[in-house]
Image 1 (cartoon, rainbow, N blue to C red):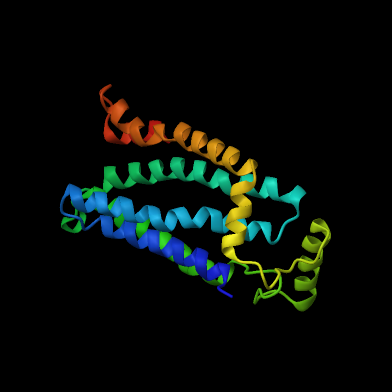
Image 2: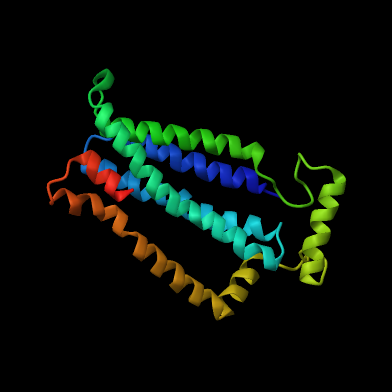
Length: 212
């Protein structure tokens, strides 16, 4: 079985590497290609993280843990703008490198480090996490099984394709998809806020602080 810790960690490393490589691009086409490819590992991260949470927490616990995970997106927008303000205002021309390139180098390197560390810090499944005792593993399995009302075990005839068909038939799936899309559209103003505020005459640093 492919370990979730490796899967999620590899996704984080992949988008960190893509972000870092954005700093060596030479033209708009290169930047555009990096932005497209960075979306591939990012798109796999969130559902993978949600699935991992669902294997450890009961239904009553899962909503709050999911909210904590999602709040990371909101916080990253704020901290990303703060980091950008510091780098763009203090690192222009350092070692002959433009400040915007430093921004991608530094943020990409931090992301790669987080991804590598998560490969051994994150748990896997309640039956095979390396750093938990046998008692803790049995307790984790018992909690989820009791909450589900059945053994937490996949049937031999189950397949990913069957799971996809079941999800598509669930009326809550498109509802949640619509809610998520609406939420992301509402947050997308952050991407355009620096451009809009710059027209008001603010400096780059002030603009990024306002965005944060």
